[in-house]
Image (cartoon, rainbow, N blue to C red; front, side, top):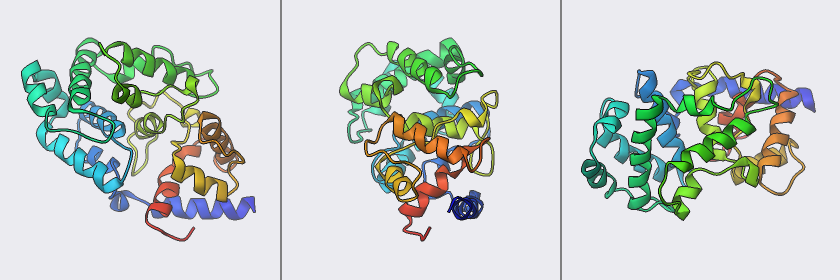
Length: 256
């Protein structure tokens, strides 16, 4: 059974390449070449990556059409009034226009002070850690400190694994930044791919239960770790490489 699962996972991993990205928020990262743009576009895309994929892509299209050819420079260069006008048009599920305004004001502060989001993550990352949990918890906590108010929407943007959250969207961002292949970018290549945790939502949880990659019923951080550990039995160095295929097999109603 293990050999059969490995063969099928590797088949689907190989079958999904850059030509098959859409529909996925990852497609927006591939529109840029500069590392700083890819990082910030990835971060924004991950924050909005929940709900129906067509709605996700619709709101991201709206955001990035406003941010132009260099979102990094655009965010740094906007004044508070320009940010307010821009974000007043953006409302998405749990996020109000005020939440989105605070997000972009905060991103401007972070980029001004730290140049890169990576620098905040690496304040707590240790290669000796079992996985990225400690660094991810610190990353989320530090970013939340920049917000003057923590609304429901803002808290939803930055969950914490220490609270049991799967942190699906933050783990998705890390997958894009750390891994490198036709899909992912490998910009944060100081982190070993073996330290990543698979981004788990209810959809991934369902297919992984069917594949016996988890025995857990609660969709939480412990489930994400268990799935990742079982995927390590198939690829110990890069277990999260199967995430895109697992997600899109179900999304596109393909046969596993």
